[in-house]
Length: 121
Image 1 (cartoon, one colour):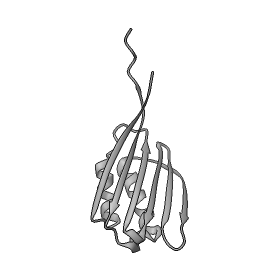
Image 2 (tube, one colour):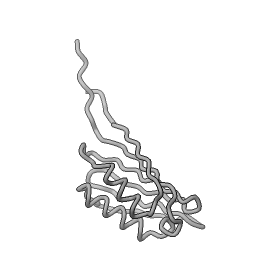
Image 3 (cartoon, helix red, strand yellow):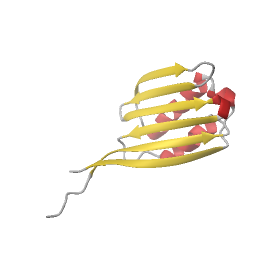
Image 4 (spheres, helix red, strand yellow):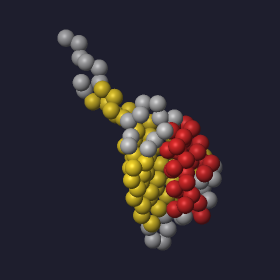
C-alpha cells in the first residue's frame, strides 16, 4: 500500500541580518517600517502586534498575521537582527523580503534559510 504524500502546512523562514547600524536596531520605527513594507510586498495581513524593548538595548517586534506571524529580534551591540516568518502562503517571496529587510535596516549581508512544515496525511 502506498503512503499518502505529506500535507504542507506552512513554510518557516529565517533571515539573519549582519552589519546593521546599531541605531537602526535600537529604535522601533525602522523595525515597524521594514515589517509593514515586507508584509505589503508579500500580501501578508497584520492583525495584531506585540513589542518589547530590552534594557539596555534591543527590540523584539512580533506581527500576528492572518497567514501566521513575523518576528524581528535585534542585537544592536552586534549589529545583528533575525527575522522569523511562519507563513501558510506557499508563494511567500522570501528573497524579496530579505532584500527589503537588508535595505531598511542597512545591513551589510543577509542569509536566508527555509524549512517546510509538513504532516503525514
